[in-house]
Image 1: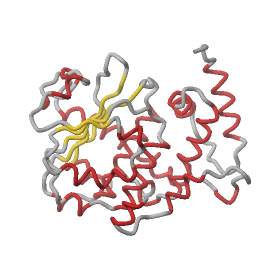
Image 2 (image 1 turned 180 degrees about the horizontal axis):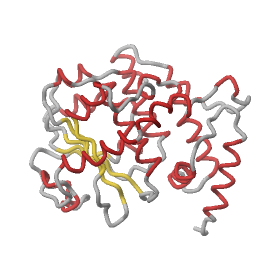
Image 3 (image 1 turned 60 degrees about the vertical axis):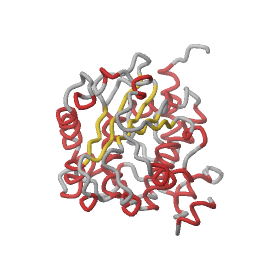
Image 4 (image 1 turned 180 degrees about the vertical axis):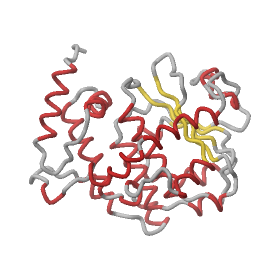
Length: 291
């Protein structure tokens, strides 16, 4: 593969963005470089991806607006969930994450608030971390997920979450692990399956409780102390990221307007049919199966 002139590609991409009347122009070089990197420096792919990125955000105010990290709703998510990028990467320069419910009381859990907080963490990472990883490995710990979780899922928010994370975020998924998977994990997985792209579904691996099969792909020493690793405690890692999110409070409060797309100004012939799917909210589990 020929060497890419990163600075030139970045300038071309930036110039294109500033000529798009419907897209926000307050996007810094770090974020633009992430889009180029995750799209293997294909300008056409990067353009489509960043357009979808802003389009989905505009069509999902429930997930991308009113994001005050000091609000009681977001603070509750901080308390009952652990969402943390780990300090060290794999030898391939893949970023590893752990996501889990740390409290089994699902009466405390709000799905929309949890997804909103997940995206706040994602925004913090993609706008501030200059060292772009070559890939990402999320680990979902299902130890505290009971069958009641199905009743807590908001299908509209789930659909937007699945489309945004698979097709619009400037990341490259390499593996997806579900650890401590209970016997009924297929029932919960069935919620997501209709929205999963085939190539993403192939990346998912399930690991039974107390299994060590995860370490074949993710070295144990990279994990927090609670998982037998050397990365420090989950609480200490999480506190670092909560502080980073809270430090961006002014940015989050202004972001509703800063990153707003204006569909009325979209040039003709510049429409992405994928964006229409965001508005097609599933009405039932039956409709999900037919999608």
